[in-house]
Length: 156
Image (cartoon, rainbow, N blue to C red; front, side):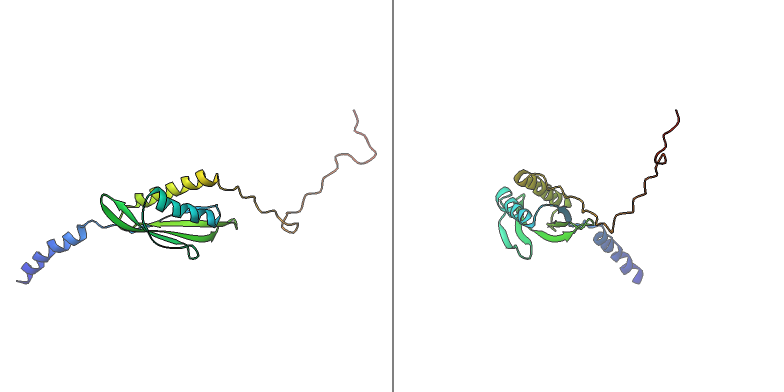
């Protein structure tokens, strides 16, 4: 009897394990644009370009929540903006897009459109100059070796 109940439960367990799952990945990109530029472009992308209603937003904290429409259904989505510092010490803005009920390629597509919008509206991101080393950080220069002693001319 126990064996039958065990065997009856195996197909149910396999069905649960084999059921398709929605990936809960998030997609992100770092930008060298100013915070205000990325914020403005994000809001305009969602509201104007995509026509999605914005359900909540806060510039100070750095998020926009919206309803993404696809095939007659709406999906809750968000764009988060985070101030970061790159390994080069330069400030950047990280944009994170999440639409949990959609495949990750939709999130990637939104970030690609945001990148294009930033370039079209504000031009290429500013080229950041490398920090200049101070005198203490510079390696000592090798003294130049004189090729000929002073006062002597090479023989011909």
